[in-house]
Picture (cartoon, rainbow, N blue to C red):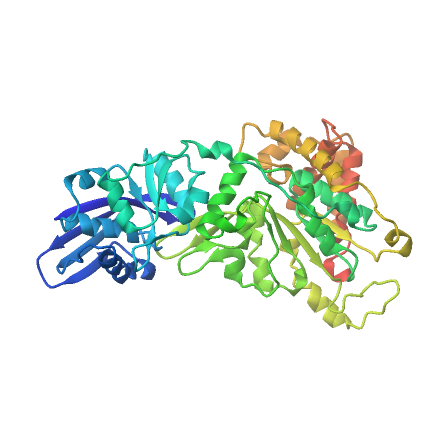
Length: 513
């Protein structure tokens, strides 16, 4: 007898429908899985048969063949356990005609324990969103996945165990339909315990981060230990604008795929990822045997903070080039190519040399010129070319340190940032661009008209400093953001001149700082 169950799977962070076909025939007792299952799916054999027995049903002693359709796409994950178990029960005649008919009404996603308990699994949210687009209305999932399932705008039943699912199919218990569109109930919950005013001095760095928050620009901060680089970076999130609903759903899908969504429960701030400098290339950019998003994708619509920037391996830093330019990561394998979103703001911090005191006005640097050169050479020219703002931080003097609070608070800065973002939202309302830093070349030409004498300023800078075309584009994008912060419709010459304050590496290379 043949039984077909509807489930789903993931390709990158996109879900797609998978039909689980189960056939039971006379022959040598066996269970065969076909349809490109990976090791996680293959391990379902023993789990499912034990769950069936321990739930009070009979485990068929026949030839069982399970096919996952479409067969040409690799399947991964433990969420096929529940549909496989129901398919075996249906194909072996252990379900009534009523239950068989009801199998077609639902989709089934869930991992099974040996006792028959339905456990949660990763990636449920993007699966349900994809199924919803295909017209599927009702899902049977684990209670562990309710936090993410309620955002898919789909009716769902939270199953505790296999026996309960069978009782539902037999109509012994009702399907209690949840709210049809819980995605509208998403609420932004932000809790910050730190404030920008706690950072002593560093007025130029604060201004640079304000510009970065308003336009989504990348920032590099350089200076000796104790100048406030990490403090500023960790408070950067407090001045970012709140998430839009679309941005939040994108983030939730990525975290769902990585099995991290429950850790963000009740916390819908923009992501702030700060990996250690010993991170591997794959962990940073994404990939693996079954490709998963890396830190750059987990920072999507948020911040990627790389402290001790020059301590990262050269290869790890170089993999950042593409996502900083294209705002996505494409991972190619022999049988498939996956794309993960990676639209983030990079905040990097580094010392000027290995000991940290090169250029310090009091402490003496013990590094040799060769050591300093080798240390800074880890930051390549092409990578620096993708950073919009660079700030040199000097040691804080005592008069600044003893003051209780300095400069505007995070709330005050954030209000200016939100006002600037509203201007940008109106500007880009007919496109997918969300901030000035993500403008295309065509949009730069349309929205970043040069002021009077502006062309001469850029031409002189290009000749004197050897700026690339990308650098000129970034200067225009940053100037556009400064104009937005001031509520100016047009870019002015003083906006361009301010940008050059945050580009010291154009005047002297990173090796010379």
